[in-house]
Image (tube, each protein chain N blue to C red):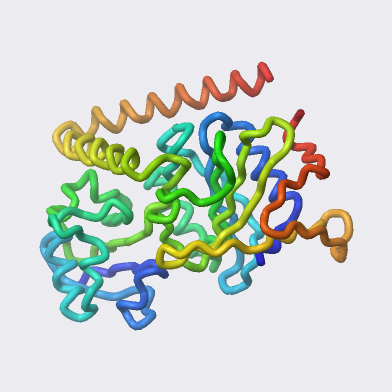
Length: 141
Length: 162
């Protein structure tokens, strides 16, 4: 079973510079274990010691963020395409506070697995309200 | 050294001013290997926070794929600090995942002047670099240099709208 995996620049040292590698597995966790057998060290960059997907990376199966597909338990099928990207985040915030947010997000993501549709549409509404409010501020300014 | 067109810097500053007091963030893409930022892509700050920014993961996938299709890479990754200096925080350093990118920070804490500084962040090590603002629209040979991010207090960013 071949699954195409797109590797970001920062992790290509583990794949001999390759941008795309192939692997196999029924779940994302299995796939990463399979990849690690040929690209030693790769899995440790993506999965924490506690066995959870690392906060600093985004992993997608086809067009979906795996945080909403069960993270490492996300099911994979032959022909799927997995994309790994470094998360882009930061800010003036202290690190402890950022870690608190990440835990909050992890909780939200696991809640999202149960009621995925509701969470997604809720987020959409918040974003839309944000944009409307933002537009009003610009017009007023 | 980061060389960047003045019109792009002005667009970044305008974005940071528009989203102030929330942090603004985005990318400037450029042809792979060129080290030249050419295409400004303002991104949503999914955190909508005054002290934190985060690309929306789905928007990031779309933009990164688009860059891939166009044979581009993220030459500049920028964000604003709205109450502190334009220097990478510990959070910025822990999260920095694009070793080839210039991390551009804009501070909007002063209403009339912007502080713009650029850094390389590789394996947790921050190295500041000079920013060279190129006036391509006016004269391709005219160059104004800011070493190590001194606030360009004498420059009037007309896009800042103040």
